[in-house]
Image (tube, rainbow, N blue to C red; front, side, top):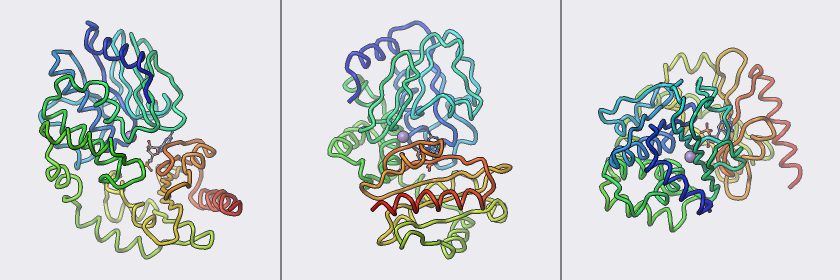
Length: 323
Ligand code: 5GP
Ligand code: MN
């Protein structure tokens, strides 16, 4: 649960301070970061506040329907003397990855639901039991008026971070909040259509190619998928098109942890970890320098792909040897 006194303070600062608000979140925007950024923006705009939504480029095409004709700023945004709200981001190093810093901000409000958030704000609203940051924002504002564009954006945050209301973070409260947001104007089919009905042909052909190379490790408990830079270039995919790729290896019977290791710039590998039930991939990612949630976490390893593969295999074998 978010601390009640902190929530009161955050709401007071957001709605009653004369300082402008800048809304920030992590690199590689996802449905929760875009949804909560735009949700908070529309809420503040409706309340007559001056707010700027900042989103790292490129904003995935599947979430652009939440932007309407709002002018979104790319980082770095000037936060000097302003209220900087940081959403869905466990530490300031992740902000810095997209060139954003918080120096000189008048007040930093940190709103997050990752395990191990570093509590870097002047006010911290952190609740790792919340399904999405969109849920924390809903709880903060409701029953204040929530205009339809904010309801749509917050619904999208919940829809995305719960895997369309199916992951283990989906609670009765999540569904009740989603129902309320639909009453307030969110259209579930519109959200589905934009996010899951707009795949490119290249993505489907890429899937057909890459899924044939899934490797099973640790007696079938781990599914591992590797994507080289050359393969990504061949299919000319945008990074955000790979967001749900990990759902395929995770869906295998018997698999507890799935890994997608994608070669990035230079000697870097972006590792995406997913798990089922009690398997805590946040701890695994954290041990390697990253973070996340119990069932979805990630880390960027600064090493060549073969070395990253060997390191991941070793760590996973250690984890599964203990069981
Ligand atoms: P994804 O695999 O979709 O990139 O990320 C899954 C989850 O792990 C998200 O909640 C994301 O914020 C978190 N995550 C991914 N990469 C990193 C990282 O390098 N550092 C931290 N702290 N969290 C990460
Ligand atoms: Mn989130």
